[in-house]
Structure formats: C-alpha cells, structure tokens
Image 1 (cartoon, rainbow over the protein chains, first blue to last red):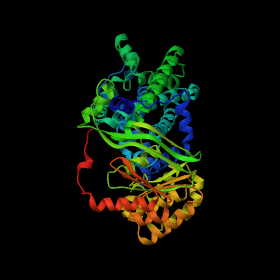
Image 2: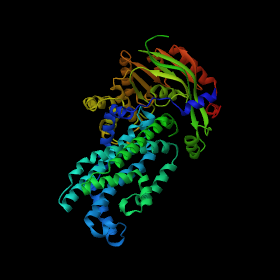
Image 3: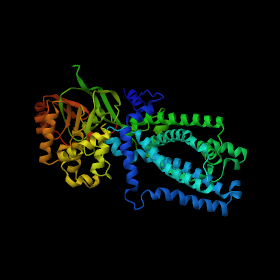
Image 4: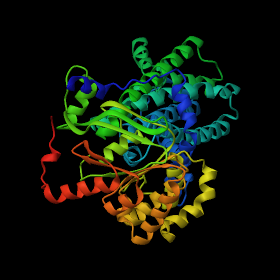
Length: 281
Length: 256
C-alpha cells in the first residue's frame, strides 16, 4: 500500500503538449497583467525620480565600464581603436546579461516570495515565472531604448537590421523562461540554489563576452564560450544592432533549437514538481 | 450515487512529506526515484465524499484533524497522495486567514489581484469595487496595506471578494469566527441567499451555525470521516466527544 502511495507523491501524470505553456499563459493573461502591473508600479511608486532610475542605472554602469575598460584595463582588441563602438558593444552585452542575471537571481526564491498566493488560493504557480520574465523584459526594454538613443547620438544612425531584434528577443525570452521554471522548482526544495546563483552569476559575467567579443578569444576558448547560450545571443545582437550584418543562419537556428529545448525542459521539470512544491514550500 | 454531484472524492488520502532538513529535500528531488528521503505525515486517509449541487456541507473537527487539507484538496491547491478528487464548476475559497493576500499591498490592490486569481476580468472587478468595499465595511483601511489589518478586517475583505466572484462552489474555512457579530450576520445572510444558486462547504467551530445553515455535516477526526449525516446528529456526537476525549498530542504523530 505505502509503496504505491509513495510513488504517487512524485509523479502526477499530466499531458504536456507543445502548446500547453502558451495556452495556459493566455488563459491566465488577466492574472498575469494584474500582478505584473502591480509589481512595476510598486517598484517605482515610492521614489522621487520613479522611472528615471531605470534609465540612470544602465547609463551609469555603461559610463563606468567604458572608462575602466578603455583606459586602464584593455581586455578587448576593439577597445584600442574605437571607443564609441566598444562602449556600445559593452552596452549590448550588459543589457542581455543583466536581463538573464536578474531572472536567475530571483528564480530560486520566486515561489517563496509568493507563498501567500500558492498556498492560500487556487493559483497557477507557473504564471509567476511569466510575470518575472515580463518584468525583467520591461527593464531590459528601457535599457534598450537608452541604447538606441545613445547609438543614434554617437554614430548618427542605427542599422536597419536592428528591426530584426524581435527574432532574437523571443527565443531568448523562451530560454529564460525555461531556466527560471527549472530554478524556481528546484529552489522551492532547497535554499542552496539561491546561494549558488549569488555565487556564480558575478563570475559568469566574465565567462560571457560582455566586456570582450567572442573574436577576442582563442578558438578553443570560443568553443567553450559558446556553450553558454547567452554568448550567441550577445554576439548576434551586436551583429544586427552595431554592424548591420546578418548572423550566420546555422548559428541562429542552433541557438533557437537549444533555447526551445531549455524552454520545454524547464517547463516539464516545473510541471512534474508543481504539486509537490505546494507541500514543501 | 446521484448524477448532479459537484465535488466527488473517491478513496482520497493525503500525506505530507516531512523532511529533517533542507538537504534531504534536494536529495529527494535529484535521487527521489531511488530512495525516500522523507517521513510521511498522514493527514487524511480513505476519504469518500460526494457533494451534490445546492448542498451546504458543514465540516467540523478538532485542530489538525485534516479539515483544511480536505478543502485544499477539493480546491486543487494540493494533490492527493492517492485517490481522486473531481469537481465541477468554479470554486471560490475563503481559506483560514489567507485568501492569498499580499501583505505589502493595499486592500484595494489585493481585491484586484484576488479577483483575477478567482478568474474575474479587470473591468468586472472595477465595476464591483464599491459593492465589495461596502460588503467588507472596512472604510479607509481599504487603501492601507493589508499587513496593518486586524484578523477581522482580513476575513471581511476575503469574504467580500469571494462573495462577488459568482462561483459555483463557495468554500469557507473558519473565517467567520474572527468577524464580529454584525459581520457574521451579514455573512450568514449571504450564505442563505447563495444556497439557492450554489454549493457551500463550510468549516466552522461554531456548531450552532453549522446546524442553522447546513443540510449535511461531516465530522473529520484523525484524517477519517468519523460521522456524516444530519448536522444536528453529527455536531452533537462531536460535542459529546470533545467533552469525553482528552486533548493529547498523539494525533500529531509523524510516521506510519
């Protein structure tokens, strides 16, 4: 008797179809909108400059990094000859990296933060991950707008390939959703995941081509860098936003395929543990 | 077995996983298929229950008997360890001191989010805000963060939201106990009206309320349904047991 029951604890059978995550997100769109709107409001409600901070933060960061990496520490070949280009290149790296980092930091405690919803009401916990992703996407979009203004001002034009940016943003967001689902479910069981993220993310910024480009690396190091899917996104974003060139189609398709795998992998993991999470959190 | 059931529990059991420490939780996730790293705490065992449309079911029992867990199973908040739970129609739960409020948000913001959780559209909630505020009757506290609320205000607001949800099944878990009499009267009147269009599950320690409102009652004791039937008979048996059985800690025993 008990063995059979114990088995049931871990595996609740659910059918996850290809469209399931999207259908559910659409089904709960009102809820997602309500909580997202509240979170965005809350972040800036009590501050004097409100949305100004969202613009000031990336600019300040950019200024500091540009000065440091073009004057004292030269880690990229590009830094030596063209400061403007280099700082724009860092800017793209930072936007992409910070978008991912914010979510990865938050994911392990996401369910803990919203325990009042999960335990006390009939709440679709997976939507919390959508909300977190959309929230970070809004901040990334603000930084991106600042970037475009900056690029226009510094170089006098934006390559029209920049219009292709949604083709990078969508798979990137799907990949982040997958990672966040995975970390959120894992983080519900142990706080170690949260500490692990706080430890490794600041290191990852140097393992990702944020302050340098993949072309600065030796071929072997470049292979390793591309194991990190964020690398490909940063490099492709630089191509379409800075150089006006199209990314290699094979790289693009491979990156999309990996992102989709991460998306569904994360969702399946979350779905598998969703019923247990309520009891242990 | 009638065909117009709205809630049906068939041989339902629920065990919580009790972990000695956080490491065991991680091990369970990673290696759970090979070994069990937790102890079980059986809250409910072998529950058979069928509720038909228009029922008002009273649930009585001592603390830790499994009443809230039974409601959580019916809501689908947690999954049964074995057995099946089926429901028909939408559910609005007013669970004990909760209703899923974010303590940092004001009452009004919580109404908007709480309404969205119950599946109401934004405009629908906004249209009914005055009515909800009126029902809750907490005045200017509606615009204060919920963390400053008294437990009475809390349940007033929680009940007010659910009362406006137009759900098919209303689940009320001990919320009336913390409200004052004026509010209780308001709620009881609402429940009486509601019975004509929906089904109610009503957990209460106020046995008189159960007798007055419900047409059926169950007594949950130690994870089993110890008695079921007429509210008067069930509550009397329960009351009798309260006076004769001792209040020991045995019933919170973890393990098999």
